[in-house]
Structures are given as structure tokens and as C-alpha cells.
Image 1 (cartoon, rainbow, N blue to C red):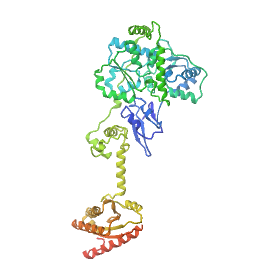
Image 2: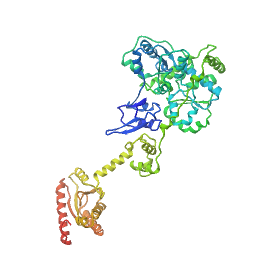
Image 3: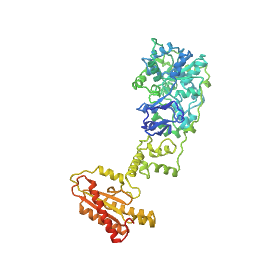
Image 4: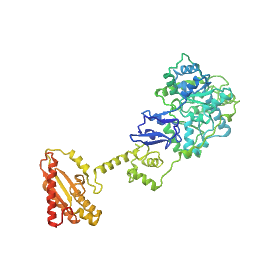
Amino acid sequence: MNEGLIFTNEKCIGCNKCVRICGSFGASISHTRPDHSTIEINPERCINCGACIDVCTHDARDYHDDTERFFEDLKKGKQISLLIAPSFEAKYPDEYKSILGTLKALGVKRMLPVALGADICTWAYLKLIREKGYTGMISTPCPVVVSFVEHWMPELIQLLMPVKSPMMCAAVYFREKLGISDSFAFVGPCIAKRMEMDKYPDLVQYNITFPKLIKYIREHDLWADEDFGELDAGLGTFYPAPGGLADNIKWLLGDDTPIRVISGKTYLYQRFVKNRSKLAAKAMPYMLFDLLNCREGCIEGTAKTDAEEREDRGLSEINGIRAESKNSSPDSPWNGALTCEQRLANLDRQFSDLDINDYLTGFEDRSDVCRVSYPSDEEAEKIWKSMHKPDAVSREINCSACGYETCREMMIAIHNGFNTIHNCVYCEKEETVFLTKMSYSDQLTGVMNRNAYERKLGSMFGGDHSVGIIVADVNGLKHANDTEGHGAGDRLIIETAHALANEFGVERVFRTGGDEFLVVLQDFGETEIKSDIDLVRKYLSGVSVSASIGLAYAEHFDGNINELQKLADKRMYDDKNRYYEMTGKARRV
């Protein structure tokens, strides 16, 4: 399987947290290895939401970006300009100028604000809403949201707003309007931006995530004593915050504009599933759904950082940046003194020379790679049986240790090759019980075997305990095998085993040879044992079976089991001799 943007490294212990959090069924696949299990990723099904990176406490999930390739190409003298995500300043308010200054000193040509692309994105959304009557649409700045719809809800593709993301809008503008031909490197918080770049390879060439950029600069000690100035743009600087797009549109259309804002990996996709049919039918009272994969929007990002407090500070910083973006110029769309109509007219004038078609995009139905096969009743029954789940109770344990909400989901995952029975805790426990029983039980009779007897001896101690040892040997086994077949001989053995088990308990009866049984009794009275032996003989007589039985008993067991066994063995042979004398049969027949 080819490696995608997000991958599993050697630290994986197969704990299933990533399976549980994954919003794309079958993207996380369990592989059972000789020493442990690992959870690999199917890149075709992965939507690159980053949830598994967040939840993994073993740092077993990592991702690829283009940071190293960027620095290598920069050293070679390649002409590269940066597209700076608006969340950069908000997330790293104390460092971003120094970081950009360092990159400038290393040869980066231009620092270009993606916030301008966000302003263009807002303009394009409003143009489609006003001129084309678009309503009930799903926002598309977030590539993970787009990926989820393309993979899992293709019927909603028609509702994806057909506008490029702010990053791509900025790239189009800087290339077509300013004539910049440099390679573009996007500096941002998102792993999934690479998917957009692969779609438009001529627009942006590098995806550089904040954490890997800063790590590379630190590890290679590249800091330069140089700062970079401010990056100017409008209210698009607020796009990274949850509801940032909605805030921009309401600024221009009015606060009563019906926009539903949802963010957060698990919650967002649960809402998608719950409202799928309503969304498709446009039966919800919203003009737009402003959706972001990450709970804190692009302040958080899928490229995980080790400092969660950056998100809290980032949201505070971006509110300040938003306030600074508003100005009092009469021709600015960001002038708070103007009416919504006046602001919108100013926005239209600002971008009057743009062709909206340059900023539109399309989407692809990728659901073929996410098809799920559902087993027939017969196939499902075979899987349930292999999982040691024979009934409804065992099939509805739903412990979720495997990573799935229900046992049925796990069964379906096994059917599709996404998981194995060995990842089911209940199955493994039942398998252990079964194997333990197999290793200590005699398969023909169901009583204990010699292994169990040896184990029993290890747990017996001398002291103030009575111990009785019974040795029983089936009579006439060879004759039955020779004249009636082994089935007849097996019947004699099974009946003897059942008779002993019924009187003394299956856990105390051990088949130690072909026709030989030992019974170990602790703290039984000798009279009681003899009475039970009489009941065994009576039962065997009733089913036409005979066995020679010998008992050795110690009121105070001294720990020497061998002496007791020898005595019981001798008494069994005495009993067998009496049997031969009474029946007139030759020995061993």
C-alpha cells in the first residue's frame, strides 16, 4: 500500500485509538504481526483530517510536507515566494516576524498574504449568492471538508461552493494580476493543503506546515538577525477562526444572514451523517454552512503543535488583527461606519477587474474507493463464529476496544479486510479460554488430561488435608477395538470418564493414558469416596461397561503423591485380577 500524507511510524502499538477517532471507515487498517498489531493507513480512503495525530499518545502517526524539499531548492537558488496563511501571525505573534525575516535572508523573494485571497474568496461567494441564487451551500476553504464530501457523500458535491480556497485564490491573483512567476510555497497549519496543490500543480508547489518549518530552522540553526514587516490585507485575516468566513459575509450582508457554523473533527462529521438527507434536499434554513475540520479552525490546524495554549492565544490575537483590519477609508469594504450595502459596493469595486471564472473550481466523486461491502447472512455467521460470538448477547457487547462503536461494525470491518478477529478483546479472551481448555482437556472425553494432572500436582501441598487417589482402568478395551472397531472402544472410555466426572467433578478426573484415569480428591471423607465408587460401578454396569478401580487414602497428606498413586495403582490391579478370575477372560482383552 502506498504511503499517503499521513502515515504510521514504528512507534505504533496497535491500541486502536486511531480506529476509534477516524471519520473515514476503513482508512485505518489493523495488521496483526507476530509480536504485536499495528494500524496502517489506506491513503485512498484517508481524508487527511489529522484526528489520528491528535489522539495518538505514542506519536505513532506523522505526516509529510515539503519543508525539506523547500529548503533544498532554496539552497540551489530556485526563485521561491511565500504565501503566508493569516493564522501564522495569530499563532506565532512573537516569532512570525523573525521567522519571515530568516526566510527572507535565506533567499525567499516575496512574502505574500493569503488573507488577500480570503477577501477574493468572500467576493466570489457573494457574487454567486447574489447573481446565481446559491443557497444551502457548503463552504470550501477547508480541503478536509471537501475531501470528506467527495469520499463519503457524493450526492452533496453539488452543494460545495465552487470557489477555490483562499490559498488558491491568492495564487491565481498574484500570478495573473501581478505576473509573479516564482514557485509558490504555502506556509500554513494544514497537512491537507497538499491535496489542493496536487489538483493545481502550476499554482502552488510547496506545502510548508508551521511545526515542521520551525523545527527545521531550529535544528539547522538558521535564525537570522532580521525581522520582516507587516502583511497587509482586509477582513480575510479573520478567516482562520471558526466562523471566520461567516463573519466576513455577515459584515457585508448583515448580521441576520442565515449561516450555520460548525467546526471540530468528530462533531462535524457526525452532523454530516445526521443531516445528510436534509442537506441534499436543501431542507435546512441556511444560506451557507461555514464548516472547518479543526475545532479551533486554522488556528489549530491538522499539523499538530506541542503547545495547545497557542490556540487560545491565537484566537485572542486574531480578534485583535481583525479589529486592526477595519479602517475608516470611505472606499474600503472594511469601514465600520458604512452600511452593509456600501461595504459590498466597495468590495465589488476593489475586485471589479477580476474574472470570477479564474477563481472557480470543480470537485470529484471519489466514493468508489470508499465502498463498503456488507456480508450476506451466511458470511456474517461465519465471521461471528470465528469471533466466538454464537448468540445475540455476545454480538452486542459493544465494548469498543477494537475501535468501532459496535460489534457489528467490527464484523463488517473484518469482512472488508479492515480488521482481524485478533483485534477483538472478547474473541481473544474466548480463544485463550478455548486454547487453555484444549491444552488441559482430553478431547475425546472432556475430562482433564495428563498436562492438567501435572499442573494439579504442582498445586498440592502437605499438611492438615486428606487426599484420596483413585486409579481406574477400562476393562476389555482391546477386545472391543479388535472385534467391534475403535468406535466401540471409544464408547467404553467415554462412559467411564462420564461416570467418574458425574460423581467426582470433571475438574478432578484426569485421563492419563489410553484406558487409564486418575481421580484426585482433597478433603473428601474415605467413606464418602467409597460410596461414590460404588455409584460409579453401578452406572457402568447399567451401560455394559466395566472398569477396575483402586483407591488409596491419606487422612493427613504428607505431600508424597507418588506413594499414594502407587498404592492406588496396586489396588486397581488387584481389582482387575478379580475381574479376570470372575469372567474367565484373558488379561488385556
